[in-house]
Image 1: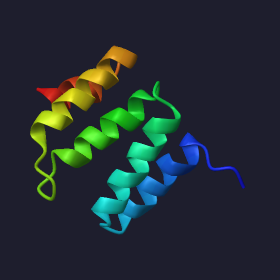
Image 2 (image 1 turned 135 degrees about the horizontal axis):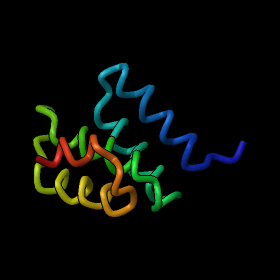
Image 3 (image 1 turned 90 degrees about the vertical axis):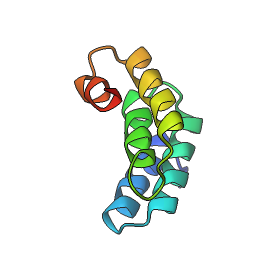
Amino acid sequence: MKKNAEYFFYKAYEAYQKNEFIQTKIHFEKSIELNQNDANAYSNLANLLQNDYFKEYIQAKIYYEKAIELDPNNANSYNNLA
């Protein structure tokens, strides 16, 4: 089975549901590595990074900005960036 960006995106979602935040981060990063045009992956990774576990606000801001660049109609990214 060839593992593509979508595979890692869904693995990230599964890991998040189990509160496995480090695995979630790894899977989102792999998803982005395989598809650098997925605004949702950037936005979800940013959301993860700004939570209480990571508190990586500067990196989250960068990822939200990338998500908005890729999809200017993504209201969630604008709201979370604010």
